[in-house]
Structures are given as structure tokens and as C-alpha cells.
Length: 377
Image 1 (cartoon, rainbow, N blue to C red):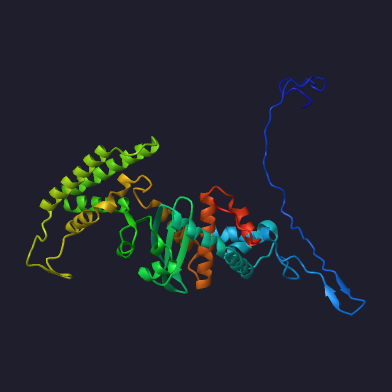
Image 2: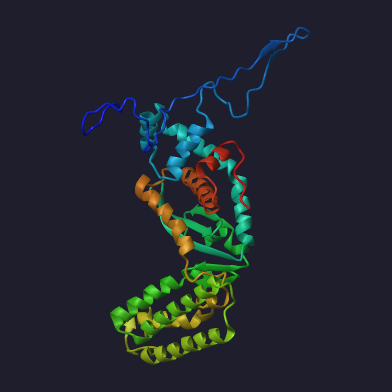
């Protein structure tokens, strides 16, 4: 600054009083680094044998991309759900790298194979945990309907793709049949047959209660909905205050639960029309009575969160974990092969697990490509 903006006087010999600072953050242009590996070739003077030095295990081809580039591509596809063709365009526009979808798929396959032991470890850690959340959703593979199953908690995630939704797929996944803790789910019947404790998702039940209240004007549904909310508030307070629930308080809440059930039975006799013939035979149940019977039959599983603070009120953990997989299909489309779906499930489970444990995703993928996946405590 050489002159005054007001009067034009020179400022060349005026001492600087202070500085006003402004900063601009940017990244430098991305330049590709090429590392050349040379393998020595020597002929033995004694026997004439031609000897070649061994390249590093990761250097398999005359020309190839390194783990940082491949991990970035896997990150885009399996974490941000960017389709293969758009990843190719992105890399060429930003880094000047022409990477084809086949190269990305080959890297995913390698990452999938390197994560086999990691997946086995996560399965064992889930089996050793006190609570696991379970859920399933439909997915398209090779143009046909398949099912994606998830078993997860706040630290670990395991995905499994199968042609079936029920017991056959659950058995093939191999977690719930061996589990002896508390399985949290939405109450779908195939889950209930397994020999462990169960806890139902009360968020699902509350939505059904709201529907019964709004559509059929059932007072018991409103009362039960409010009671479940009160129970959740009480258990949340216990968790925040690091104290066990009071026995007398639990007893009082359960008595109110039972009282609502008694009033509900008066509102909903077994059949409002004994002569009516429905699709399921005579005396079909109303939707309200159907829900009421589930509250009666599964009371212990509905209220398990009240007596065991490790058990969540709802199945949000599994629903969040499976929601991301549904988002993948909305953005990137369906899977063309079962191998591609299996690779995505394992890699995405790895990404989900390291994120839950506060570890860097991109570094984790690089480590997996180097056959040294991050260790989860």
C-alpha cells in the first residue's frame, strides 16, 4: 500500500501498524507418481541357470495402478455409491487417470478376498456380544429378487446376500443359529424360532398402534402407545444416570401394561361376527385383535428393554445399517452378478465397522488392499 485512499498522500515511509489476515485453503494439482521396480536378471557362471529377482508381492503386472488409486475407486463405489462409469469420468477429470470399470471390479475382488478373515472375526465378535440387531430387505441381483440380511450392533456390521428371505438364509448366514444373547428384530416369525432371547422393535409396534388408533378409534392403542413412550423415557433416564431400573417402578409400569390389555380385550372380543367367513376361515381376527394378541403373546419380548438396559427400545441400528444398502441400489442400480453383490456386502460391512469404531475409511481400504485390514478391538 503506497498512498492514502482518502487524500492520496504517500504512505511509503509510514510504519505498518497491524495486519488484517485472510486465508485461502486449496489443494495442489494432482500429479501421478510412477514408481518403477526393476528385477535383477543374472546367469549363474557355474550352471548357466538364468536367475530373476522376485518383485514385491503387490507388483503383479508390467503396468498397474497402486493401492492409493484403487482404494480411492473402491471408496467411491462402496462408500459413496458412485457408479463405475462416473468414477472413471471423475478420475480422468480430476487426476487425469483413465481407469476402466474392469480395473475397479478387479480391485474390489481382491479387497473382498483379503477381507475374508476380517469377516470371520466380526462374526465371532457379534456372537460374543450381548445384543445383536437383525433385519432384511429385498435386493436385485442378476435381475432376480434376492434378500440382503444384516446382523449388527453399535460396533460391528455383517451383511449377507441370499436368494431366500427366511430360515434357509438365516441359517446360511450362520450367526443367529449360534447366538445365545438377545436378538432384536421386527417380530418376523422366522426369527422367533431360534433358541435365544428376543426383543421386538417397539418403533414398529408404535406405528401399528397409531394406525389402529387413527383408523379404528381404539382407545387401548392410544394408551399403550403413550405407555411405551413413558417406558422408553424412564429407561433413557436410567442410562443417562448410570443406574439400574427400580424394581417397584418396573412392576408399576408392567401392571399398567396388563391393565391396558384387559381393557383392550373388552374392546376386541375374539370375533365381532361369529358367522363371517374370511380368507383364513371362520371368525377371522380384526387388525386390532391381531395386534392385541401379539402384545399378549410377546409381552416379555416387547418389554425386555425395560428390565435389561443393554437392549434397545427399537431396531434402529439394523434399520440404519440396511438403509444404506437400499440407498446404494437407488444410486448405482442393481447388481449384475452374485459375485459383485457378495464383494459389495463384505467391503461395505468392513467400511461400516471401521466407521463405527472411529477409524479412517480410506486408510482402512488401503490397508485391506495390502492384506493388512485394520484391527477392531
